[in-house]
Length: 111
Image 1 (tube, rainbow, N blue to C red):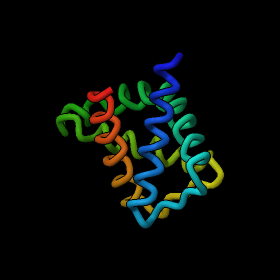
Image 2: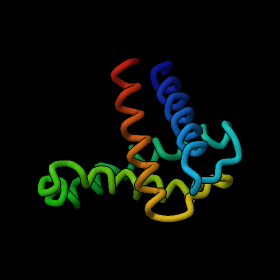
Image 3: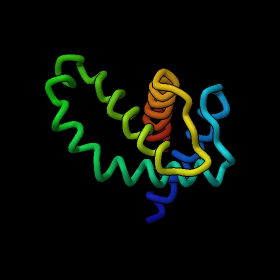
Image 4: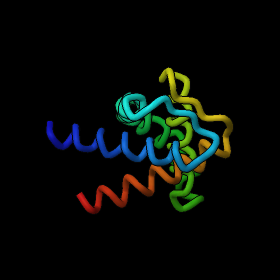
């Protein structure tokens, strides 16, 4: 249980930092970043395996880079659900997806 809470806090921190760094993302505050982290985690848990199975040929052809597009789709869905979190366009969504994915991986290795 503590691990899940720590992962949510780390993801919320990453979302907050990415929103501060990228000009196309509006975020109301750290509380909203935690909401984004929770919704993104639930969407990732429920939807990512379906998207990976459907897009498996593209993932293989692109040597896994299409996973970033799948993460961007899940971030876009999160944008539609969470009030106080807005991403302006597709390019910003892809950039945020890359930054969050890399940040999650790095922090996952550390913690």
